[in-house]
Image 1 (tube, rainbow, N blue to C red):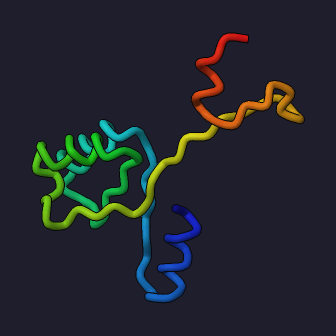
Image 2: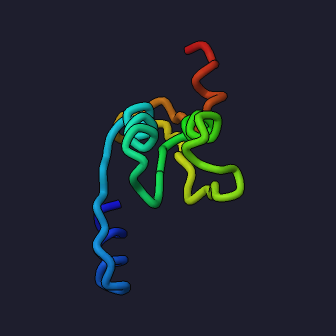
Length: 91
């Protein structure tokens, strides 16, 4: 996010202040201070909360990315885990 803000500042000549934190704290801060132009939260359910609290409007809401899950295995993958189904198999 910092890199994106810096690039935006460079391209547009507009100063950007990035405030990071947990979703509930950011929503509360936006509600209380009535400041900010963009609210980026890491989960759709957090955006739902912001929308329900009228911090954002449904028409302005955009999805800019998705969080992907990953399976981490031991070096060399000795148990040959290829997917979630492999985790439900008895050894």
